[in-house]
Image 1 (spheres, rainbow, N blue to C red):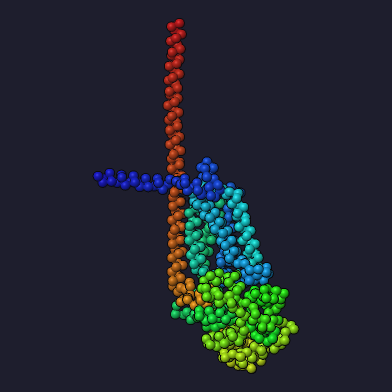
Image 2 (cartoon, rainbow, N blue to C red):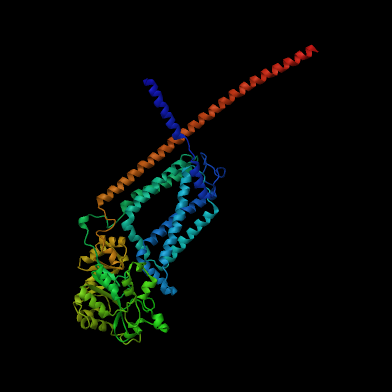
Length: 590
């Protein structure tokens, strides 16, 4: 009984081994893969890779290399442009200034980039699956054209944006500080998955050079990926107790996603969203009334082309306040919908937004005074020929002191012109610098805050200035990941287009302790090593077993053929002898 059970178990083990050694061709799957990749739907149109053969011809090898290059470039560009979303508004208005009409070019570019990446990624997956099935690669000519188009798009788009919008590369580097730990995990998982087709073809190749080249490149890339965390820096990898308070929010031109920028409605929305401060841009009208306008002209944010069609390119400062009050400063927001958020407004809010007018500095300051908010503004000097060209600072100070009830301590004074005179006139103004100056110069000018572009973000920079009681404000930060990074770096405040979004964040995204990150890193690498060793071991055992089985089969076939040939020879000899005997008998009878 025990002997029978042992034989049964042994038979099952032999059966399992035979199944593992057997090469299955998943006919429906392979048909779909070959059909979509090379338009070869019929079985006789494709071929398997035989032991010792290469997985493709030289031409197809070049095509596969181009496919890999297209995948890498489209991935880089999609990641690059996806993380540039913080500056899409600036990009679209930059194109408006050059082209003369508004269009969401940034979103269109993102959709095109996503489309090319999806297309190339599908081809990459098809190729890897075909290689895993032991099939030879053949890419259809239409896909080859598609790959070249994807490559050209990625290269040209990257070159153009690098020339016109080079600061986005700094944004890309900043993004790595929060996403690098997760990109590392994704990269390790991808390399682990590639171990299957690489091991399959490695053990089926005869040439040592090719085998050594393939496994060498793979191991070098894998080892480098394993060791990436040793040089990785992320301010969001820290203990929770060391995390400072969230940066205060300053509404950049108010809340421009919820109302037309630089209008009273926009600033009121920013206050409702929890902003601690308000940011704007100040220009002096021809008759000496400071008003809020970011652009040099009125073309983008007013209906100047309807009211004064012959003065669309005239500087905003060359209009009188009565002329400015006659303009509509809100209808453009509803018609263009620059952030895609106008649809979220109710009927009453849409009507109110569409009726907004140009806002004066006096009205802006009164709102800040009543709501106890800080204010910061860029002050533009009027053009030549303007009555207030040389007294624009004095006129602005008059409004602050004589025409509004705001306290001087609520004003972050940003203009650098005549700073010493301004400080002597009103020492309670919070002197703010828009550039990174030496500490000695900042302290001599009694500067208490830096107002810098977010690309200057650095935990060391913030800490260095904080040590001498100089706080840091960064502009413009509207994306949660960028706000999270500023929070982890210890930034004190940020100017944002989305106070309604950032004010809801209770903690930074991607925050983790060093212990949690080390555990994630070590477990990911260990799991990858174990899986890769198992995959290579399995393919080594499988190919060795197949070779052995093939040899036995050939030997068996030769023995069978020899026996068959011997039997046929004997039969032929007997038949010949019988035939000869019959001939002899016939001759004798005659």
